[in-house]
Image 1 (cartoon, rainbow, N blue to C red):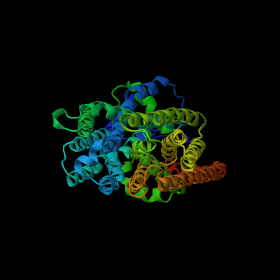
Image 2: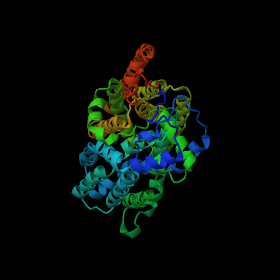
Image 3: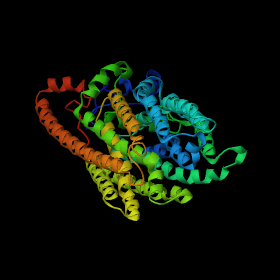
Image 4: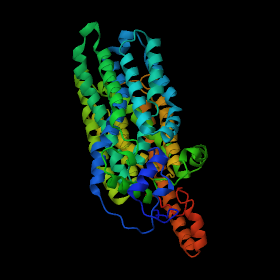
Length: 507
């Protein structure tokens, strides 16, 4: 971990320095040199601060992303409720509509994270949510395939940066050893949204015929309007940074900013957005970023396939209509429990890689059973391994990356790159079930997903080996540097970067 550094006067953080910092930084996620701290300075423990963050800031972000996922997945529910029949849309046209959404999203994550670094997440995230909700609602009023595809493109542009934005937001609010549990809450919200999607779709289908509209239109209209309203409300209550959180006292702001600084998450006086382009190049040169990005491609391809097509997969197992909608619920419910349990262990013992390896193994076994069995009940049971393994694997992957890329500008780039790659994988995933792989066994799709689980497992093992070797190399260099104080002081200037010898990777 980092050793805290001196500011220019070697002073401790004070309430006055916090106020000055907020003026200088505009409340964004970089911190001026006035917030540096003296080496070895005592720091009062304030566990209530994290409880406040968990109760008042985290739920907003979790709801924001859960609603986004609900907006993404409801098209699958609308599909089996009559969307294609009403619009006379073929399977190929349906996959094309989903593809255009992901293509529109491809370049949004890095761009949105850049704007987040400049103006702050309070403005960027709610804007994307509100515009996305509007697009979702408009899907319920279109009358033809071209109109539906056009709205899907707008939806992709509006919501394309949300995942990268919320990951960056959480990474700038919590210390590294407290992050995975919070990201697990985020992704548990995703599983809950997918779980709730089936229940909500079943309920909204009862509006079939109201206002002379089919039930699938009401799925889009009701969910879209709620999303847009929630986005507008988020402008009022989403904190822009820990230093400007309305629910924290000044003493608590001092404490949380000191903790984040000591953990290497806050920068010095220089504006990090001025180094953004430099950090883009640095991020692409990090071996562990490359391996985790490849793993993200595999896991997101799997998660997207399940998010969109699990209702169709379950229907192919013989569960029709409302029963099919409800049968989607239990696998996602199990994934919530698995995700939170593994996150608690990973935060407690700093074993991000180990949890990722275990979850990848779970999903590998699940898809192998689905492929090998001809018994529909056994194949449905295999979903209780593949769904938790795939969705649970996203949590340690996201946390592992956020923990091990610094400074924050570089971290924002890396998170944006991963989301861009996952958007690309999602573009491919929407073609697997139906156009390429036919129901009910979906053999080609299952083989592809099985291979991808093995690939994710290999990336996790490779990253674990690389980071372990790097920590050992840095330990040797630190010992040498401690014998030469001048060399140590030079290294201190760059310790905010993860390639510094003073940065210890979280395993």
